Image 1 (spheres, rainbow, N blue to C red):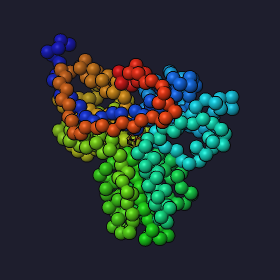
Image 2: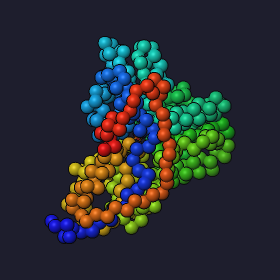
Image 3: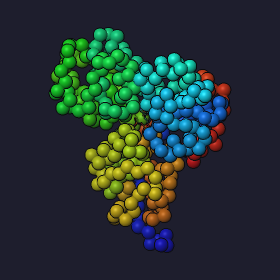
Length: 333
Ligand code: 10E
Ligand code: SF4
């Protein structure tokens, strides 16, 4: 189709979007470990919830496992990296018992939530964790404390059913990637039912989650379609789809790659919202914009709602290895 025959399409591109400082650090840790120690580098769980990132690291020599007992004895000297989502205390303990060499890529903001949960426990409080059952971050946070010390709350209905032994001795923390609005509702319900419940010293939902949800909220009203780049197992990406739907986008979808877009089902659109979850690489955002340019006469409007300057350094053991732009090109383009 000649350029002039294409229908006009405005893409509202959210900023901030995509990689947060914790994801960037975790990927760097795997890349640097491969450079320093050579392949294989084992990674416990997807380093971040994105297949493209995982496959890119596999191509460099990373081997993904779910549990550290999958590491064969003859590879005990190879490094094993723990994913950005955090691990229960039993994981580094087991690794130390087997004399494995581990590098913990848990995001510092997840570690901060762990510390807050431990603090509540030390002060004699039963810990209420607001989060999604089965998510690795939730498993990691619950695993900071002995069995029975933490109760998981997923919904306001759970709050109504919750019957703690001592309602006067409670403290809460949350998963870092929750819906800001839903969590405010759940925490409000907890505070109404248990007025003595103690909040964490610092907000558990992280800056990246908050900023990405805010950007989508601002951009969604009137959008004919909103696409969030991200994986189905990415909690923060799925929350962005919900935010887009609730904030006035006519439709919102999660997409992993441009090839996943069902073009014949898109219908007539004039305004597209576009953002990416914290684990989704910019190279895929670019791929999707280009796929729309092939079919529409595209104007990109950048919707800037916040400026992020967070940058989390890697651990000391890897700081002597140089990280070049080329090393991260597989995700940043
Ligand atoms: O499923 P999540 O959103 O928790 O993880 P992700 O890998 O998609 O994004 C990074 C977020 C982390 C590591 C949790 N704080
Ligand atoms: Fe850290 Fe937040 Fe990114 Fe999770 S989403 S890795 S808590 S910065």
